[in-house]
Image 1: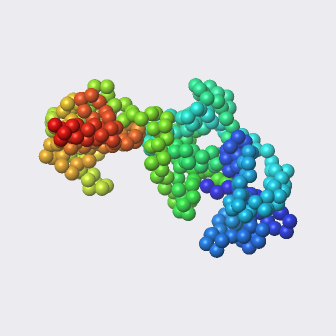
Image 2: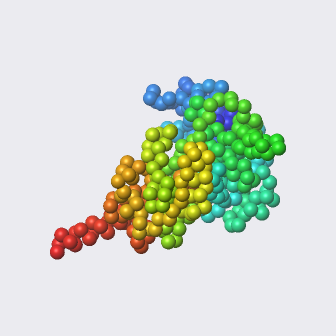
Image 3: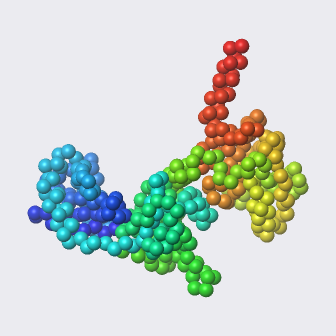
Length: 373
């Protein structure tokens, strides 16, 4: 999302200053010049930045509370001018009031895994400082002066979305121009409908009436990395201690192969709890009329299950449709089970999970010892 910049005169030239950062501690200001400004000459290969309806500009410097950096060493000659422009900007810039509050922790920002934002962690955002303080278990409450900048920061840090007052999900989207947009979902009047709101240039939410097509941002790699940093290198959240799963089939010990209408792929489903297996079976019966029954599959029975003839060319999902931290894909090479989850690839045997690269190294070492014998 682009916020409108401020044009400041410096001598007989104009300069555009764009705020970045969401509060005073991480605030930054980008300074840009007009094309043709001989004080900051541009290479022929450098393309200008078109900023909203304010025309074309070239970035020349970036300021933060501790330093002023120039895009090109040659631009250092214009330091006095840039400092003058920044000083004029600061004199006229109104002191912003907090628009919201967040919780800053040692590893990032306070948040949670929620099913409504299934691709990763959601950061908490509060419209009241007291409410944020009550939710804080560790860390500290920090003000947010720019919501758009804050949500953009969350995207860069690998958060999948936000949770407003721990209730309303805020989704990160892309518009037709490729710019970030932020949509908040809440219950409408009477609680029977959904109310969709988009953040505007003034950092205010307004009703979304379908103007402009929006798509959910696909930021999977960054979201996975953020979850690993917050949750640790674990194979799957919620994996049962005994490794036993639940499968669905028309009868016990016979997995159902479901053909997807969307992608034409053949799917087999596994669940970490009986409750989730029952829930999916009920939904499946309502949609297709086909009745499936859950049956337990012990950890020792996963390889025989995954290598059955009817499983060939099947995608075997663990907890499909649930949060990415709790779901994954499994297969077997005939001797072990391999899990693909948010934290990477894992090998599963009777002793539990091992990162696939460690398991492969152990196998190679055993093969080498055998060859030596």
